[in-house]
Image (cartoon, rainbow, N blue to C red):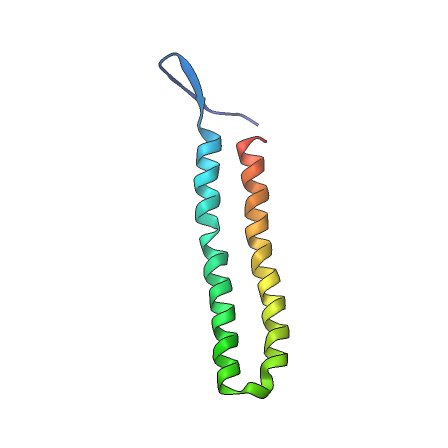
Length: 84
């Protein structure tokens, strides 16, 4: 894998780590919004129909896990891109 370096004041700076950190920060926004929407829907559904809380919670936990996997994949890609 080729690492791009920029020479600033006779010192090589690796930009991949910084760009990877910014990319991971941006990538976590999607899962964060997704988790918020999942739990907001559970709260609204439980408020409207309390007897469906058990079914809603099961669906919510499965959805939560799937959304959080996206954040974990982003974390793995960050470590791969930053080189360590």
